[in-house]
Length: 197
Image 1: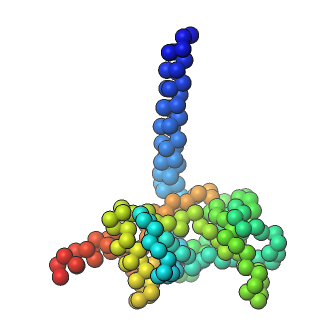
Image 2: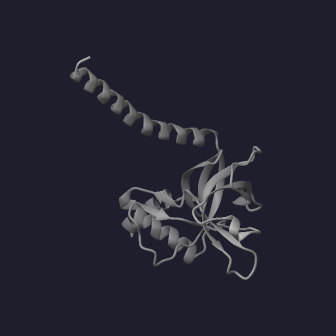
Image 3: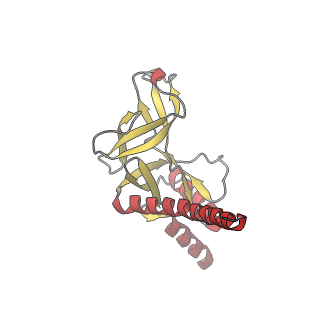
């Protein structure tokens, strides 16, 4: 085998590997969307002083804390598994937290411990970091989307939530809803109103 043949073989292997990795990621997300379960995660207002970060809006969630009995058993940044259920108002609720994937067939989500709050005067509380705290959009629309999202929660308390598909620990953030409408539709309608006025 000459040097050119060896280099060509290595080049082909590298190209296949570079194509395989993104294709596998896309296929995995599509499989979650097709076979996973839909959950609505109610969102909270964003700090208005938090700077806009580019092509995405930052999401905070109502269900981002969970009381635990022993604060020393949990570490900041540790991987955790949240068993989910749908609450009375239709939003996702955390049923339990564990350090390993649940053995039962209930829906669960992989997340991280943000920090452990032991100074709240009561039971220790974990703050949860969800893997879907950013919603990416086209850059020209993202700033308007963030303003619409922030204003809907702070000015008129419109119901806002993230639509997330969950399957065996993995998740895909599908959309952000404002008053029952996709944030993309809200931005489009706001632009059309500005043009007509």
